[in-house]
Amino acid sequence: MRKQFGISIGKFEGVAEALARMGGMTYAIDALRVLTTSALNQGVKPPVVTAIAKYYATEMGRKVVTDGMDVLAGAGISRGPRNILSNHYIAAPLGITVEGANILTRTLIVFGQGVFRAHPHAYQVIKTLEAGDSKAFDRSLWGHVGHLVRNAFRAPLLSLSRGRLYRSCPKKNRRYFQKLAWASASFAMTTDIAMVLLGAKLKFKESISGRFADLLAWNYIGFAVLYRFAAQGYPKEDQALVDWAMKYVFVQIQTAFDGLYANLRFPGLSWLIKYGLGTWSHINRLDREASDELSHEVAELLLHASESRDRLTQGIYVTDDRNDPHGRVEFAFMMAKTASKIEHKIKDALRKGLLSKENAHKLAEQACEKGFITSAELRDLKLAEQARWEAIQVDDFSQSEYLGSASGPRQQQGKAS
Image (cartoon, rainbow, N blue to C red; front, side, top):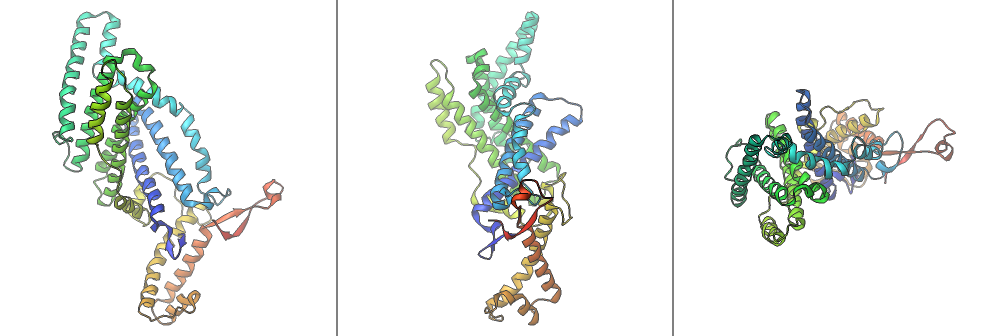
């Protein structure tokens, strides 16, 4: 809707970067939500998975809202009924701190609980030890040893092949599944090493535990993204969103691995982990950040009315009431897209020298008089301009209104900065 130098601000690469993050993270958040609540709907109560969903959804959500505020600029910081984001921005810390503070969720709960609850043998080893059942303990212990040995072979092989040795995955987006398997095997191996060498001390290594939590969580989020894409029938137009989200996932996993290898301290093994595993991990990275080309492709999806854009807002209240601030913006968005096609006709006539630039403010009327656009299209242009103007206005209050002695706001006639 907003234009600068005659160009929609969404076309500016700086704004496109923010839009790409908003689109990609929203896709990941919703995938995480759907996969987690589907388990809850079946009566399952997964404490680790729900902790992951709470922490990572609220953290990504905070980033999305912050990017939205940056794009809205003055319309985002000027409080009042017209502001569609400020209340969400102010409310973001509620999700971060309520029902389990995010810092504690990441550093104590996700991996602290998950390392025993999700491990195929560790919980049974502890359980049988407490029960004094020596036979069951032996079975659990040797099962754990076998698991450790398997990971000791599986992780290096998948790492050396960059996941290509993993074959038990769908053909669609195969490389993403293979990289998740590779990351998962490396995570399992590193977890076993830490559990064996640190023992009970691992529980108190909160920075280390937080990085392990990131590894576990981003593997889960990556699977959620691929699961959502498959469940919706692999819509071709959503592939860019999947690609951006998966690259973001792998970058977060890589960052967690880098942090682990740089900070894990074991007597006699610190050098090997830091310069051996750490150097190899740095060279043999899971993935790189999304390219500018991919980011611009995701941003472009948000600038057009499409099924892909609609899927990003499934379950979210969207109104066509133009007196509602959300409805006003949505109406202006739709009209701006209608107007862009008409404006293209006018620009085409200008390039051919068929219209005069002398009266630029009368260009649309001139185009209509000469038959380049119809009278209905001229009306649409004017309606679009009015809708655009209405959408970018900000609330303005007098001092008495601000102090609460008057009943309501008067609308400023200037644009947001």
